[in-house]
Length: 217
Image (cartoon, rainbow, N blue to C red; front, side, top):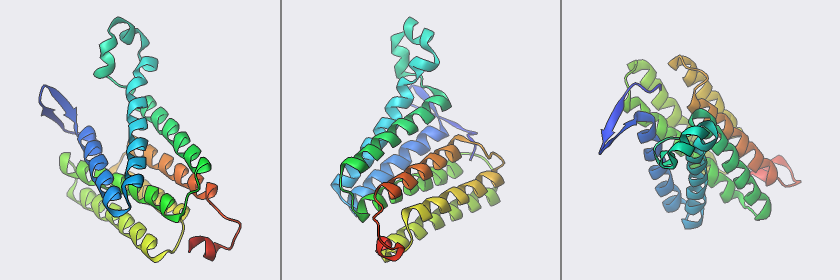
């Protein structure tokens, strides 16, 4: 959903997207920590930390003169879409390095899948409640993203399909939702594309030279 509302919180005014992001992070971290375990929760927490810190510090690149004149501006500004994409790239590279260095089991990569889909679902639902828009579009957004999460959770429980399969479903559903929202190339959809690429990379890095059925199991 496009940002249409801003909310005063203390002495600052935050766009609805920031509130939705924070809500998504909190719910996702708690879900993974409680459902999968502390180690997986901390891994997801680190992933989000790298994204946010790079996004914030990238203002040094996007507005160097401002930072030089007022170094404290780093606390109040960020690198915009460029900084967000840079954060996604850096965090993805960091995660893939961990995959190659560590011996990941099936639950490791599925915990990342469930976490990233959970975050996107909570973000999208929060955006529908925090912003103005068509009731039909809002309803479709909520139902479709919840369906993706339920499908992913079911596949994880039943040990069917692969992380790459579900990543493809997420991208396809988000493409459709962005189309009906009338804003196809938005930051949230770009984020989903990077999520898909990361999950494809993780799946490939952990693939074993065995049959497809055995790999799923």
